[in-house]
Image (cartoon, rainbow, N blue to C red):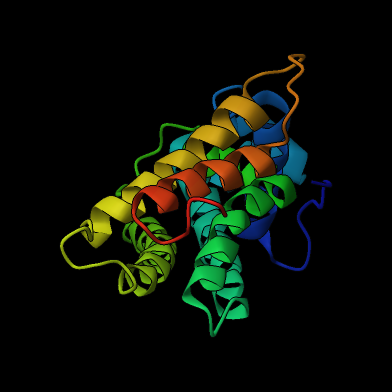
Length: 205
């Protein structure tokens, strides 16, 4: 993310952009508010016009990230219609696509230890992202025999955990380790095995 600095009265966003730059290069706990203000091109005192501390600044970056995350997953979901399977698959792929496009937001959202309940705005944005996946899962669940159908929340949690695990283990935290499969292949094959177990795809697929 490029340094934009403070201009035209956009102080709050300039500070968020500065924080995102520092989050990507130093990690969510590797910078101070003074560094954020310097990167934004303002005085340290200016930070407190909008944020009580570093955690509040990161929380706002995470809130924006969840909003973009929800938008990306919603777009993917809609692009898969009218097939419930296609919509579900596209939504899962959007998870990896988000990390690749917005790594600094991903870190703020998932690796900063900031609770999604820190602010009402952050909680609402996080819920909206979860709801998109839940909607894709609910539509797909209609094709599972009622006796084998898991609760939508459990189904959604399994897919979320699988997606997040692939990202963290094979995209974020294994520098220098060679692996013969791409994160996309790992996620897609894992989800297919899961769906096969639910009878949503044939054993030969």
